[in-house]
Image (cartoon, rainbow, N blue to C red; front, side):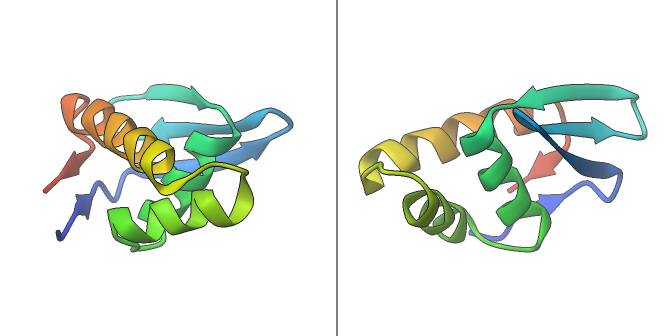
Length: 85
């Protein structure tokens, strides 16, 4: 699956995960560490599968849980209009 992530998104790491800002709409999201890992993988040009791998490499979760988390974040990003595909 090819994703098109908005060029207006920026990610700032925080003590508790990250903040993701859509500079165009000025909307932002606070992300927990797992969501921050997913967002970083996607913003760096990775696929959803790359994001799953990043989560399972960093956290003690299985592929099923990581896949569900990636799907959930992607759905939220699509609903916000900051990712297509």
